[in-house]
Length: 124
Image (cartoon, rainbow, N blue to C red; front, side, top):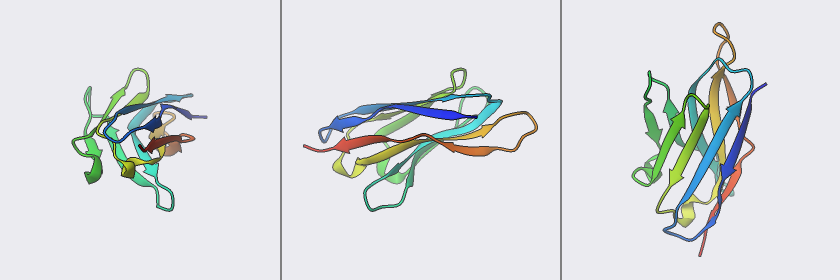
């Protein structure tokens, strides 16, 4: 079984910064993709940022509203992904979920896993 455990989040004033981290554990062969989604009250869950493995680096993708403010990174050796969030705005408020596409063995297909979510509140 695979577990994603998030840390970080909390309450911050507009313009402030927060950092989220997520660690994947379990019997894992590879994690092609890791990322973050968020869900604001009354809204659907949306992709915030994802990062793929390409050799020792990785390609990234961000939702337009966070480009230039958020930075996603990962440590492949530790199976962790982080999200540095700067210049936070009230519209960034929501529950942030860690996401991972995981392969359990060399021959197994990929499957999607989610963390339990962590609250980020941006308010004065």
